[in-house]
Length: 460
Image (cartoon, rainbow, N blue to C red):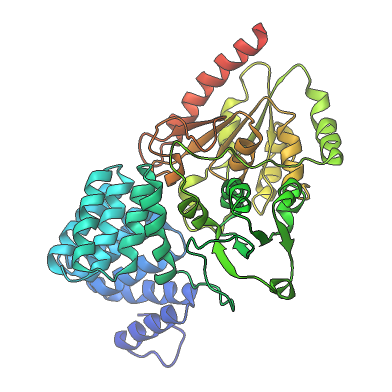
């Protein structure tokens, strides 16, 4: 045992110091103390599991799995250790390994409803929707008040295209652990008559979901109500045409006279959306100054097939590591004749894109974008957009621009139940990993398909 802290004079002290640092979220300190402790006490399964949980929180999933494997070697039947390992396996993309552990944990702790929710998530990740549905149906009968079971059932039903049941169960998100409903002095709308009323529509989740669900605002307006909605600056110019149906608000003072509020993700439920009755994507506005700027960027490349590319969404999104990949992957396509790529990315990863020289080959067309209106203008000057699942694909789909959406093996419910298209966006093609993390396969396919596409383009 080697430590510079004079208060630590035994392995027991070191163990306690490490766990205290971990609990206080001093992760670097905790990691170093765990390392020192485990070098002296490598048979402490609980601490190996703690270290795995720490690595998982740091999004170092390979090391998390390695630490949890050590814990399971020492105590293979401890439910807490199996559960922690299953979490890490899932995040690392080993869903089959996570599933095996989930099944074992349930045998030891059949009275814990969280285990059934996690088991169903594994089945869903493996596209075994019937097994996920069956697991949840039984669990809900056993634990009728446990919100997470209904939330997981919602994701299953939505992925199956059963939107009415899915969105109804999704309302349980407000009773779970992750979300707290906003505290307004007026009630949540649950489908009541809106004639002559004023309703506040609250966007949820990210920009992409706001663009996705905005298509329901005209139908809501037809119920005879006045609609108010807060809107973030990056969408403000883009949504100028939406103002025909909605009054955008900025302050709490503008909440006066509201009768109800509604989460945006509730609109499909109360407006009766089904796979066959989805409204067209919302109309979006592209300002002329944005169009002029976009034409200036693309003008030197006339005569080449122009593709906009995107490799990462928000880095704060907890599953971004699954849906995103390195910008350098697009360099694999650079030897395709007559191709010019334009980066649609704006965010903290842009520095790396410039630092390694990739921006000399792929034009940085979005790093200085003011908002999504600039993004929309640029995409309208391109021949194709290729992106991982991000707000950009929602924007392209809403504009009717051809977009190839590169999906990891566990796609969002929106991109199911059909393997290569979604009725939400007719101009979108879905290209999904055949196995977890297989971006090699995706880009090999892209190279073939883009080459063929450019040959067709040249013939025209």
